[in-house]
Image (tube, rainbow, N blue to C red; front, side, top):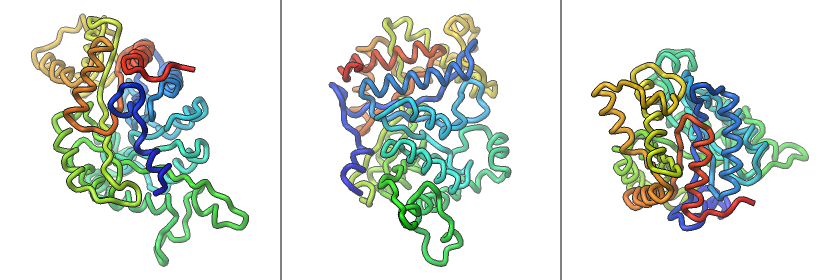
Amino acid sequence: MAADAVEEIRGTARGTAPVPLSVLDLVTVGAGRTASDALRTSVALSRLAESRGYHRYWVAEHHSMPGVASSSPAVILAHLAAHTDRIRLGSGGVMLPNHAPLVIAEQFGTLEAMAPGRIDLGLGRAPGTDGATAAALRRTDRLNEGADDFPQQLAELTRFLDDDFPDGHPYGRIHAVPGPVQATSPGGVQSPHRPPIWLLGSSGFSARLAGLLGLPFAFAHHFSAQNTIPALDLYRETFRPSGVLDAPYALIGVSALATDDEKEARRQVLAAALNMVRLRTGRPGLVPTPEEAEAHPFTPMEREFVDSWNANVVHGTPDEVRAGLDDLHKRTGADELMITANAHSGEVRLRSYELIADAYGLPAPA
């Protein structure tokens, strides 16, 4: 792979940050807010991230969750591409078993045509929702089959993106457009860029696969912290140099929220934790306000979950968050930190990324 393409994966640390900092956006919807409000926040956040030197901005696929308006990453990314100029945009991720590989190749080929050299394709093998919703998405209740077939689906998607099915393959005459086939047509000219594929995971399966294939790897530390170091170790141990990377490159998603004072940070993360309590107990809803969370009569079991959940959320003043992120980097050796800030208010989320940028001396906005 060309040096500039490798640089698209690796990124550059800015300010005093130990590694590149990036953004994971769940397009969260707070109580009393609309999906339109959440999407406006995403536009504002992508522009803030670009102006302050965050490396990439990813959107995660979720379904049937009232408080998460990111069911269509490709649509959202097209919207963000129209409002930004430089920052990398991508999926964190697209849940490949929910979609036909050709559809994903076409969607991300289109995004690449809209924003050349700025698109990442992060792929996961989980449904990003409950089993019933996954069955509705896939038009089948044979869900395990989709996860088990992930390596084959990945190989098919890669061949569509590269337009290199072998002679005699049933799909050999099928082309993902926009894509490389346009360069081979009479008078054709095609962009040299192709969205780099990342594998996402919260356990060892994708870590091992990413290592064997020599692909970059993104681990969901923000909801599977106990598996982070084992998965990263497995990725590094199994890594084989490829045409994509000559050495491992792993980012981790981390929940982090900075506020101007520590007490306010605790209020905000309590509300986000209550939202997770409801999701984990089959009652997904909009992200509650801090006031609602403070008044909630937590059961002992709920309180135990909240304490455990928030133990892995880096929160507090900007200096406290910077120290927490630095410690996490030292413990994991992650090559990049992708920050997700979950809060009821879009204003609070925007302020958090601004404060973290200030804490690390990231470039001032133009």
